[in-house]
Structures are given as C-alpha cells and as structure tokens.
Image 1 (spheres, helix red, strand yellow):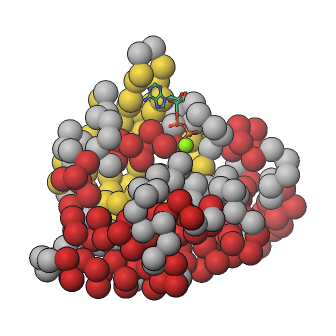
Image 2 (cartoon, protein in one colour):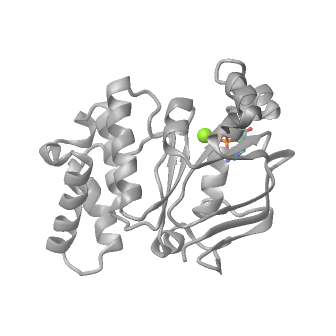
Length: 254
Ligand SMILES: Nc1ncnc2c1ncn2[C@@H]1O[C@H](COP(=O)(O)OP(=O)(O)O)[C@@H](O)[C@H]1O
Ligand SMILES: [Mg+2]
C-alpha cells in the first residue's frame, strides 16, 4: 500500500532548523491536513517528500521504499505529486500544452496523441476543458490553481500534496475547489493538504497534523485539534477554538 512515512526528519538551512525531528505516517486514502503558522516548515516538508531538498537527518519512505535522496523526477514517477504554493504554469503555452507536458512525462502509452487524450481528461475533470486553447497567462487565479491541479493529476499520483491551493480564492471558488479535492480523493488518491482556511481543513480532513517552528506539536481528529491548548496558543487563537464543544465533549458528545 502507498503509505508515506517520515521518520525523525530534520532539515536545517544554515543555523535555522526548518523541520525539526518530524515523524508522521500518511495512510492510503486519507485526506490529511497539515497546518501551522507561516514559517512553520509546511512547504519544506513538501519539498523534502518530493525530493527538492534532502533531509539533514531522518528517512522518508513511500510504499516501503526509501525515497529521501532520490531525484524529484524519480519520486514523481513513484506516484508522489504536488502543487506549488506559488503557481508556476508556462505562461506562453496553452492550458492544454501545460498539462500535456506532465502527461507526456507520466505517459503509460507513448506518443503525442496519448498525452493529449490524457491531458484533456484531466482538464475535463477540473473543469478547464473550455479553456484548453487559452494561454496559461490568460487564466484567472482560480483558473491557474485548477491548471495546477490538472498538471499534478496528469502525473497519475497515488499521493498528492496540495500547498495552499485555495489561497486567494473567493468563497464560491473555494467551494468548487473543495468538491474537486473530494472528487480526487474519491478516485483513490491520498491527499495531504496545506491550508490556512480552517473551514476547508475541518470539512475535508479526517486527521490534522500541526507544525510549529518545524516540530509536530499535535496530531488528531479535527475535533481534538480545535480543542488542543497548544494548537490554540500556537496557531488557531480563540477564533476557531472549539471550547464549547470541548465542554460538551467531556459530557460524552465527543
Ligand atoms: N531554501 C531555503 N533556504 C533557507 N531557508 C529556507 C528555505 N526554505 C525555507 N526556509 C525557511 O524555513 C522555514 C520554514 O519555511 P516554510 O517551509 O516555507 O514554511 P511554511 O510553508 O510553513 O510557511 C522558514 O523560516 C523559511 O524562511
Ligand atoms: Mg508554505
């Protein structure tokens, strides 16, 4: 099974410890939220898992195989895909061409036609088929975020790491994105979502991991996380704190 497992992973940049002795296991089929303040180390974890950086110490396994130290293209071929916090389409290529590039890389059948068919299927899935002929630079932000999803889906991922895919979207666009993420999950793709909007995290995730100064400070169900004093202090503040339910939980509602 496609379990993703980090064991004692630390990453230093000079004197800064961006990720500090993180151990976590992501099980097949889960939608896991990775939350924490800016600078907590969330994107660095994505970069470590996808081979952009090597851990300073610790190991990363996928499907039981060591992947730390492998090149990004080798890791993506194993079925680990990601989206970028700052979307980076090729602006002068069309929407379709942007997805054909990863579709060609991941192609199960060779040839331009097969890549085009696979790319179109991804564009239809994310609702961008009508925009296939536009230049990527002509898309709205919401469109570029969906293109980013289509590109990652073209890699046939088993695990998809979503780095703030909803940042900057309006509420209607976020609802559409939520449906899309659920649909991707329903296809059997394991999802790790980095997200600041607690509404999104709470509605999607069965389990939430909380990072603070590079370290994992809490892990649990949405209910448990919103009641965790360390998480409230480090990140949530009082706004999302589930204190009322916490009292109810003690009486057997949890
Ligand atoms: N390539 C890098 N070189 C030096 N420092 C980095 C690099 N990438 C990230 N960092 C630092 O590591 C810390 C964690 O960053 P990041 O993982 O981007 O946080 P998050 O995604 O949670 O906001 C920050 O202090 C950031 O400045
Ligand atoms: Mg980040």
